[in-house]
Length: 390
Image 1 (cartoon, rainbow, N blue to C red):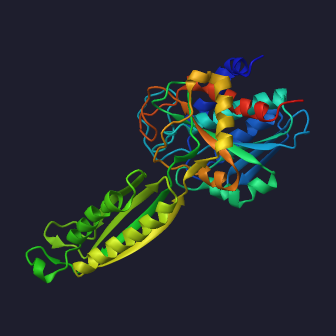
Image 2: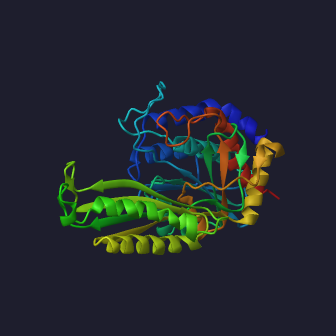
Image 3: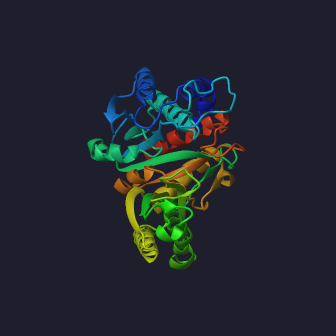
C-alpha cells in the first residue's frame, strides 16, 4: 500500500491528535503535557525506545527497521511549543489557555511526526534506525540547541537530520526547498542611551536622550544601505523605543532601544554587531550622551546541505509529484533553531504548503489539516528511501 494511502486512512486520527494539542498549547520549555501526550502515543505504537527530558523537556524516540545492514541512523524533528498570542480563530477546538496559541503550526508538525512514527513502527520497511525528535522551545528558547548540548546527536548516533515547517501561501501539500541558506540568523541587541534629564522648557540645560536615540535609529539603517553588499540580505530592525519618563514636559534621562539583526550570510553577523556598536556609541558621544550596547547571539543561519537537500526534494517528489516541489525557493528572513541541529549534522529543512491562510504568528492563523497526509508521507518516505530494505 502506498504510504500516502496509509496516511489518508489515518487522517482522522492524526487530525484528532492535532486538535487536542491545539486546544492545550504550552510555551517554551514548559511543554510537560504535550511531551506526555507524545510519549503516550509513542508507547501505543510500540516504538523501540522513548527518552524524555532531552533539552529539558524534549522527547527522543527510536524505531528500528527490519534489519540494520546499512548502519544508517537518520533524525526527524518536529517542534512542540506554542506562542504567547491570544487566539481569534473561533474554532471549536480553539485554545483553552488564555493568551497562548499554536499560531505557527507546531501542533501540526508534532502530529505529523507522530503519524509517521505509528506507520514506521507498524511496517518497519527499512534497513537502519529512525530517531524521532520532539523538540521544545523553538519560539525563542533555543530548544534545538539545548537538545544538541545534551549530547543527542552522539548519544543516538544520528548521522543526518531533517525537519519541515508549514508555509502559508504555498498550496496545500506542495513542497519548497533550496540548498544553502534557507532561513536567516536572528540576533538581538539593546542600546541604552544616558544623557541628562531636564525640563522641556530648558533643553539647553539637558542632554536629550530621545533626540540622541532617534538619531541612532535612523543611522542604524545605513548598515544595510551602505555597509552591506547590495546582493546580500540583511535586516536591521529597532522593535522598541522607550524612555524613563512618561511626561510630555520632561526630557528623559535615559532611553532604551531593542531590536534584531537578521542575515543570510553568517559573516555579516559580526559586521552588523560592530557597526551597531560604533554607530550607537559615537552618535551618542557627538551629542554629549553615552550609549551602552548589549548584543545577544540568537539562532544561526539555517543552512541546507546540497546533497541532503537533493534527497529531501526527491522524497517530496515521490509524495507530491515533480511539479509540486520547488527546489529553488527564495530564502526567507525569519529564523529557525533547527539551524543548531544542522550545525551538528548535515541535513535539510523543507517547507510544506499550508494553503491560503493567515501567516504564521497571526492570531487568526490556522493549520490546514489537509496538509497532514503529505507531511506524514514525507517523513516516512525519508526513512524508507534513505534506508531501503535489501
